[in-house]
Image (cartoon, rainbow, N blue to C red; front, side, top):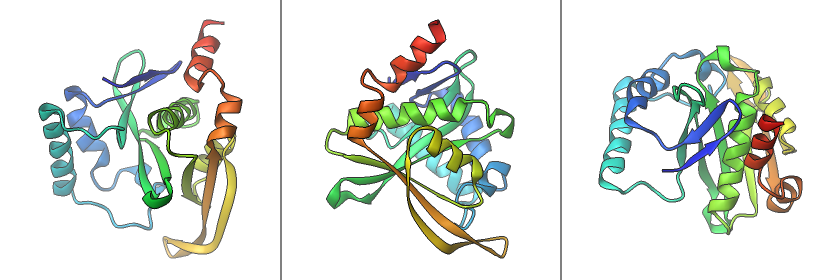
Length: 202
């Protein structure tokens, strides 16, 4: 089982106890979705259930993708599901991927949990995929929390496509951040996780 521990959270494989919360939080009309690509169409409740069931079927028959395309974020103390991290190919031909994160419950926003989780996820991607040389993060100019998170982790703002997104009838910029492997490894020579562990024990 994949498990990366931070100070407040763990990034890990999904477990059976996550199932109901996963369905609840990723069903339509949850508040966090107003910031997570709100310009895209949403899956129906039925499609969410189908996706979750398919994931657990892969778990049971041992056919989960490796490296993982999605992991759970859970509270370190209670192991309760808090969110997820994921990635997709921007261009598989050139080993170019985009990563993302969602913390579902707003009461856990702005307290460092997202910072820990996305840092651990960046670590995982570089370790699990030696062929990649960069990790991207895409967002929009109305998502201040995501832009702040990217900057705090050292991601460079590399792109701004002006008025490329429409949210609630208003135009926003599409924003792209990225970090190179050599940058990440220079900042975290022993790994991001070890730094969190050292901070927790100091």
